[in-house]
Length: 236
Ligand code: CA
Image 1 (cartoon, helix red, strand yellow):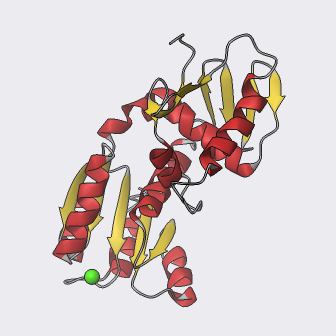
Image 2: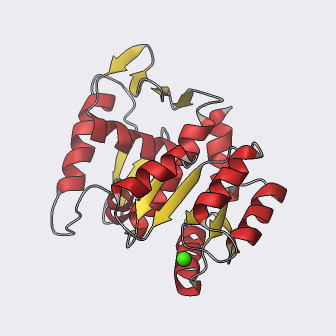
């Protein structure tokens, strides 16, 4: 079941194929802080080898690499039927790079320099998309998400959400019974420019809460004073 798969998220394994030691180290550190297990390959040959031998949930692939470049790694893996989601890092924000990457079998691309919050969000989204091939729904505390239609239900009742509210609910559902700080939420809803002074997160949570909790006995989104928010069906 998808939920079990997602709850195992701490065990998700990512391969980083990147020759620049500093960048590879920084990416790895950030992913590990998020609970991922990370392997680093310093060149295209080693990267391909690792990807052939190990089971990864996603690959972060640089383009300019020793031995063979990222395009080659990507097409070799696809030719050998390795279908793991691949996020390519490009040095140039170049449209032709993007087209080449997507045609070559990459699932997404991210121009350098990038924000780590965005990298993490893209990786999570790729893994989720990949796992939703197997399962298209997720259920938690009576809330059901339909990943394909991006629809939410509480019991039988459909809850009409904006795209941002849906993403926020998805984030809560992937982190049940955990206190999520405003910082954590803002980093995962990466296209939101976060100003710690602003109450933008609080507003979004308020809107979402009105939609999913209004008219139901048990509130699921709880405010934890001074810390953030908690998605849970347990009384605190
Ligand atoms: Ca490089």
